[in-house]
Image (tube, rainbow, N blue to C red):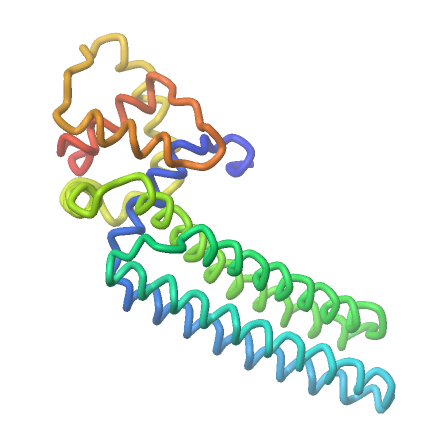
Length: 243
């Protein structure tokens, strides 16, 4: 329900907040989620082995090898992106992201194939175990994909903004957007800003041009509403943390 109603601009602002996290923090989360997925894949393999069907077992081993190869390549690409963040290097950003998307799609295809194998052959309690494992795998995978989406946004920022503008933005985010401000809070408070908008005069913020650049860099040509302008100005001008 929330996903259908949630405005992409507010979602993007939430992503901008995540950009202020230290790269080491996000890297640790990626590694932790990846390790969890690999453990769960091993559990899947143990269930596959109980079939005693050599054809199915060999097919699983083959698909698992493809997954590991593609996942390792994807992790290396994410590390390469992290290096670009550290060095503030803008050369080849589009190309590295295209490679990321290529391997991400391969990994997702591997997961679909492997999940379907067990769904097709297991029944009763084994099917329940299988579905439970894959629920956990998807949860861990979503954590990685969420970080990679944030990386994508930061790459777009690097293409659109100067290094000192990115630093300026990061400082504002760290200072003014509360860490415990959830997506649900952002959605809920948006309604308040719609009511308040007519009572608030738009000021000429010194960071207005910076924010315009950020909006232009966001994917999908997102249209900004009056409520969003109020929300963003409050954050950018240091009022958001008090809400």
